[in-house]
Amino acid sequence: MTDDPFRRQILEGWQVYQNDLVRAVAPLTGEQLALRLTSDLRTAMTLTAHIVATRVWWFHIVMQEGPADIKPMLTWDEEGEPARSAAELVDGLERTWAVVADGVQRWTEADLAQVFYRPGGDGSESYTRQWIVWHVLEHDLHHGGELSFLLGAHGVPAISL
Image 1 (cartoon, rainbow, N blue to C red):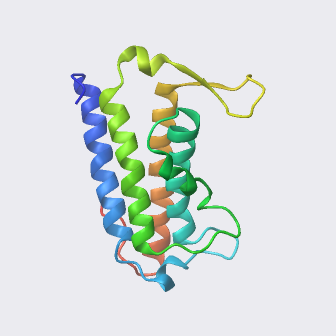
Image 2 (cartoon, rainbow, N blue to C red):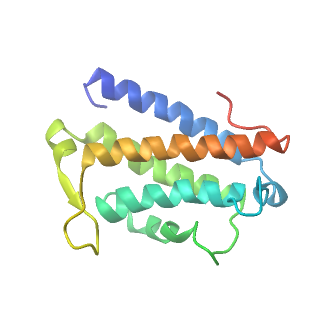
Image 3 (tube, rainbow, N blue to C red):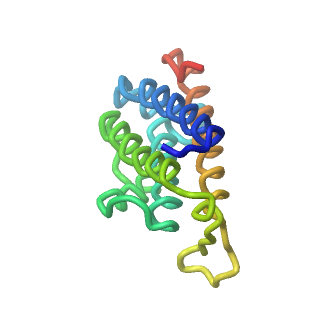
């Protein structure tokens, strides 16, 4: 693990959140995964799939991290994709988390400053690796909170904070 105590603490805290997210999703039934707050908002399944897909986008597609077999998870949150079971979603969370944790532990300060460009873009959108890590962390927290609120509103055990 990195010898940077601040980065280590962030990674350890994110790991706790990852574990809480997995614990909340793992027992969900198909009916519970189909819950939503209103007809125009995402289901519990789609919210979880969106967390997975976003990790794949930023870490695998943009930064070329992780194994090729996570690439199909990129579309899990898209319209028309098949419903995923809790076991599939947990597998996606765990496999993408492994990529996140591996990178955050391994990257140097110089690596965190590396610039990436949006794939398929015109080269005008650039992001440092540090920005991507922060963005994925805040994205996990935002949509995990949304998932937790949705589950709690339906009386289903949510993310334990």
